[in-house]
Length: 335
Ligand code: PBG
Image (cartoon, rainbow, N blue to C red; front, side, top):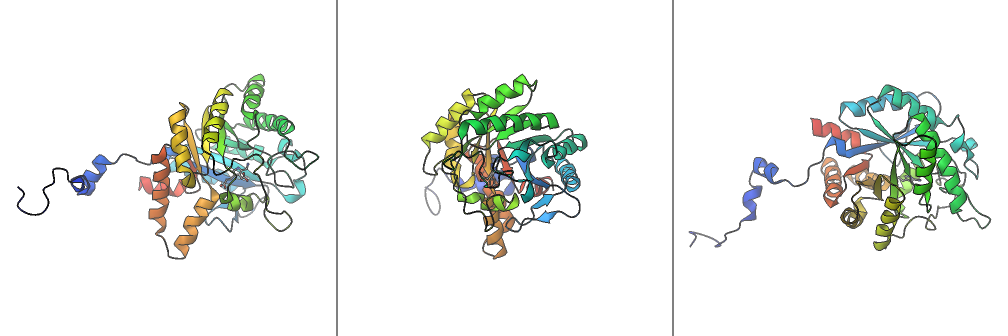
């Protein structure tokens, strides 16, 4: 008999009693090495341009990009994902600037590789920064994104990225067969060591809005709201995500990604259970914007919400997380 209260053998609160005990029983811990920083780069000099819908995020010049990458290394981040913002005058229906030698992406990759050789560079393989219609590929006569000709263009882009010094190429376009085609093209060009991070389960999500502002694709009044449901996945589907992962794995992907992350924790968990490959999750621009917006209104605690959002993604099964919070969270983990 206990002297007072309930007669309980198991009191879960004992393991929560002090910070020390809590730290002993903590199951999931975020490390700087888990985080990948997405960064935007544009041509030209001068000050970096802020992205209004993503507080703290800018379109870098090559110079400020390199400075930022040095800072990433200092706070313990091991990888960055680079996205170009291309001037409107260089965009066309074919996105041909993607494969132009003067594409700012290539000089940016070279500059980062030279300044920070130990930082892994992940380059996005898709045409949306370069097409005037904002889609990830080439359009057919009906205005649909044509799979096979798009894959041809993506192969060239992936090789050019590898040549510039990308460690990993990340096809984010959701065309069928692109992982195999890119693997074979890289190998044929001698880039056996360049990895492929496949955006395997990428959903047609409303959470990409601020990103499209950042790269100026599909935002603004001249381009109607982009509908990518003909190639990106239906948010209602789970089995299809596993099918996508299986195909990308068979086609030679080295890592697979789930995107978005926070609203798709069940998908991260399911994918983790079905593949032996490392699983990445992308906490996308809209997830970032939401936390900033609520914090600005004073409705959520900024740092606590930010950290919890990332811990939840890791707990769901992600081995690595692309997040716009990467640098600041890594710095706070070091502190
Ligand atoms: C495009 C691409 C997108 C993102 C990464 N690569 C947008 C899209 O598919 O329209 C979104 C990333 C984010 O929202 O942070 N290939």
